[in-house]
Image (cartoon, rainbow, N blue to C red; front, top):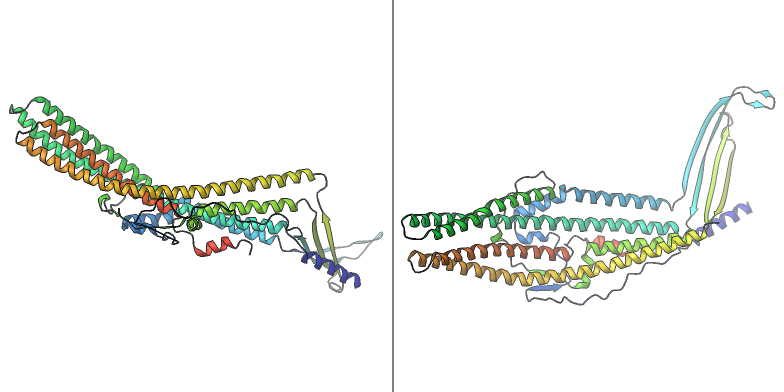
Length: 471
């Protein structure tokens, strides 16, 4: 009995004094700017995250329905969700490695078993029992594996969030591209209709001997230029609809019309968190940090493999015929030690490789932070300058429209040449297309900012879970 107590006391001591080798994670320190370089008076800089459904700022019901449909149907989004579930299951498996493993067995046999040289009577023998094995996590190997698996699960969660943000961005950007093509198709049709009427008028005047044939040729050229744009933008519109359909997870089909390009919200209120806060909302930054945590934990795993493992085993069994079964039982309890012998150098190299992986993960984290700050700065510059450009482009269109109207009156009255009127037509056509392109670029700049600022997809509980990795 004294020996049994000593064994139990020794085993209890081994369980209590378990340590955890390898470096504990420390968040890297980076020189993050206090504020953004580009600050417009219309920009609001605070600690507020981008709203979760920021796309509603555009007040376009078609865009809203497309985004919601894509989040449900897009195959890449569904794959990312399955990866998260897989990571959770892997974490559950890893946690189970910390617990003892129990097995059971049972057997029933019948026969005339030999007793020396004489066969005995036929008897039935029953045997049953249970066994236990438990590798003590004395060096913290499995706790480090659990730490790594937990970080990988969080990494997959943040990767899913990053994919959702990218998906929303792609759907929105493709939708605005479609609006631009539809607007340019509308411009091409209206311009072609006007030039067709002008060509009829010029042809009548030429046949009446009022103007030279060169005016007819010039009118035909201008008509052909705008007319050729119609099939071009029809094709681009249909191709964009096909891309957009796949993004939302449906077969290629016609996309319904929402707000036209000219009615979109070009003067949105810009809310952006300060750089240090913004990084807390970027899923790719949080994902990179979780990858770093995971790699750092693997160092501890590799260090633990340099030391012997300690295992506990135990068995409780009973055997006998049906009349005596259970009257006696046998048990055993033991401990074992096993460790590397001839491949110590190989295990040392594994530690070096784990340290290399951690340094790579650290550099990737730092690069992700720098890219995040650059993307926000670029988006703020784009919004500020494109707003000004849209205003200037609109003035250009208004002036070109007035010039065309005046030039036509002057030409109709014989005050100026047809060449002047053609030039004003060309300038208006060009100005209208430039305006449509710039408006679409401004909308895309807003999208770039919302994506760069984190897209509003990180929940507080997820951030807290990531911040409490060791708990």
